[in-house]
Image (cartoon, rainbow over all chains, first blue to last red; front, side, top):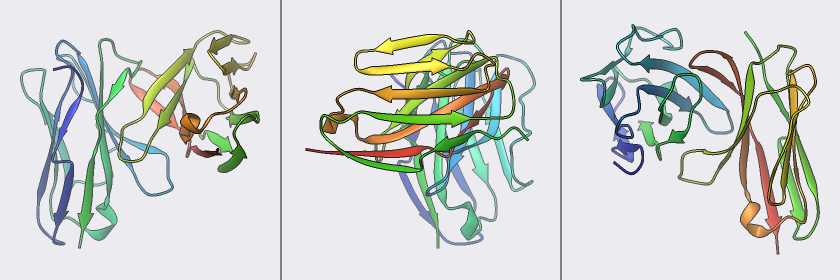
Length: 113
Length: 110
């Protein structure tokens, strides 16, 4: 696609429910990143995929968070048993080479009530 | 944990004035990026600086990377309302893992 596409743009969920957030990177980009941005905060690194290499999951805050990238393209970030502190904007980015982010998606605003 | 500190946190100026935003760390980065983010949008990359002491200009925006590659500044000349946004710096310490600052919210009023 022309840019990084994320869906849904907004998601309201009840505490304890599972949610899936989707990221469709720019075609041909081998690197994909997930970040979380809370109100008034900078971006918090979650996970990084680069080609066929094992992902860097060191930023995932708990085992309730997981992500996969199928076929080297679309990625899904899953949050199980959501908590109120998970409320944030989740941003996806991609680049044609690892180490230099070039494009971000618009983000998914997650609200846990 | 490498910490990137941005200052000021908030800046409100009149159109035509100049402003400078700072990004500081005690750690060395291989490169540093500046982004601008508008409400409801993802950050948009403005520039990447790689070499210590490097200065890059993008129209009215001037970016400088410190000699020791630990700090950077963004200077805007004759700010315009379109410059309003959240300015984020991001340091690249290792492949794929960026350290972002908390951002500086800039508001330029006509």
